[in-house]
Length: 431
Ligand code: GLC
Image (cartoon, rainbow, N blue to C red; front, side, top):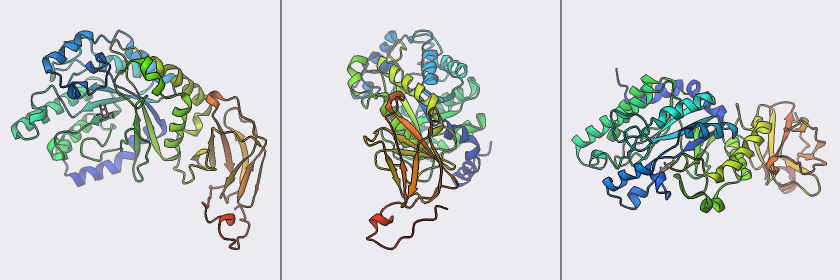
């Protein structure tokens, strides 16, 4: 196989990305699943490193790592019910333990612990529930003898690169069509050459030509991965990955995690941000070592799913980035063609929401859920939405659809009349 140079490879990616990533852009919302031997400790997925575990002692955690039958299906069923469209599973985390029947890495869930191929169960569950299939694959490895030595020993580095290619080749060869390859922590080497990422990814893409790959292999690949925050990447696709509690990706005791865990409103608010700014949300669950879904995630996620069943049009599909996300200061917005979706959480006591700066004519206004019309008036560069009562919508959040007659035009403050030091402004013609 001819390996392209970096410029040639990046150009090839640019020319094929829109077609490969279209489904993912419209999917918007995915479930991250962090489960591994570290789940048995219940104190963060970096415990082996942070607590300086001797390898042979850490390996014994496999005896407590059971992942009961049906666990992967439970994860996928919850993802589906939550309105998520794809999943990403930690097939092998930094501790080096593979969750599949690997010949390249015998330290795996068929030889230890559950004695089953969890990746296969996960792939089958994703397919049962019609979800996109993502594999998380750490580049760091605390179990492999060359994982650290690769930093300063070129023979060890070559062996480690061959090992990483072999395990990722197994993942992308043995489980049918895979949609996402999600690398993590390219440490210790600090450049793509150190990982041979350019060759590895071209070879892996030859196995799965439609796949999308994230940017954590020291190559930009297909999408950026802001972690723990929802900051848009201006010129490329991006996906914000978030824990459910701001504490750990891996399992922590549910009762102790509840005070820090998201509720449905916060998750919907995160979805409004990624919907406004052209990104995706990958929200994590860290199942217990027996595979069970963390209790604190279930009700909020199911509530979000019920909300999305009625309001999903504001987040799924071909959205365009909006410059006026904050809209009137408390609402958020997303945009699809001539429709502006106003996501609202704070309902005005006087029943009126005013949207400033829009200079295109409004055709109609209605609630997204149920379609009930909303009275409105448009004048002085302002749209007055009237007689609004706090809807009894799920999670107290509702979306108002402002349908414009043509392309939406907006002139942000401070150059609207009231804030422009009285400069002579004509009423817009609301073209
Ligand atoms: C960080 C953490 C890793 C976690 C990942 C998820 O890289 O080191 O443990 O899996 O974030 O994005």
